[in-house]
Length: 437
Image 1 (tube, one colour):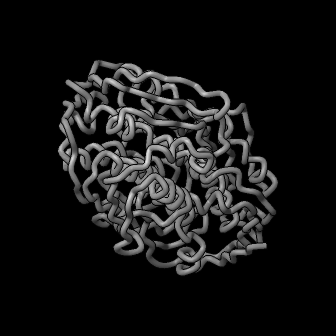
Image 2 (cartoon, helix red, strand yellow):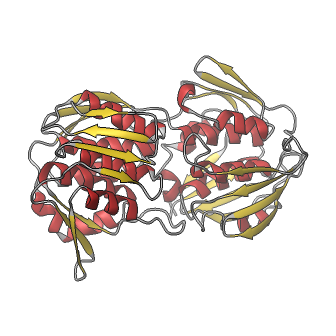
Image 3 (tube, helix red, strand yellow):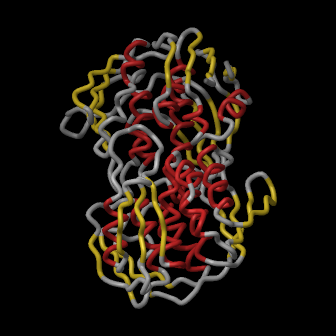
């Protein structure tokens, strides 16, 4: 099991650039299945989840050309649908949460898809009902094959556009339904659609491929079905979750760093939320400078009540950021309530922060109250095991700010979402050693 050995208490100094957005990558890479033409995508993060998804679609028959470490040309002209019934496909798809995103494009182009229950983070229930209900409204039929533990999704007569009101504003659900609907007969209207920047990016890419989509950026999308799509080129956004992670690291370590090319226009309320947490930052064009010399103080609401940070559909805070906000609050002056609405197991990593000296009350699976310590390096080192990507990065932030040397095990979880995070942070003053023992 791979581990990080982290010597805490080091102030960071320098410039760092966020990687391409992981969540966008999983969508736009699967969208290449919609056309036999070449699609070139740049700013792709070289992380485990993305590499595994690319390997999966390569096994499905997609040709890839690696133009540079972060730019790949995809050509899905000869897809082997028989591979979907293989044991190898089931095992790979079950280990990768993003595998669910291939079903929408395959259903649109070939009228069939097979979907085993996908894997990913162990953060509670992540239901797929939104995907399934959307496809059913478009005319798809389902059969569960218990022997294989797979869903067989078919549309032998093709998909037909319709009106649908999504049961939740699911980002992956919205993306999957969009990809299924772009070549459906007639018009599809999706209300309560997710409108995160990643969904907007997918829609813009599809439009360049020949799709007709109205309402991009809103929660009401109208998709006019077309007969076919063609190739295009696409550049991915910076990863806003990584931007937030770096802001949290700088704040907790009392550091002076510059985040370059962060995509300010697509960060939503995240910078403002960090300011309410007391983090000092300056916006310099498309860069953010954090120079945290003093302890940050959490604001209260206007009536003096305790500040609450909760996840919400865009443009609210992403649930992927709440683990970072929680750990940053442990060294602040003041108190805050973290409310993780979406996933009931994502806050269970706080026991390790409590072991490090953090003052946290886990109220229930969704809420944690944090009482800040009012000083840098108030945490002390410990040994931890990362349960998922976002808890893993929160543990790394805590270890960087703590006194002493910490060990974080199961860092394969962190590698799933953060490219060479140890090398990049070491280049600006961190002391992180990777151990393969």
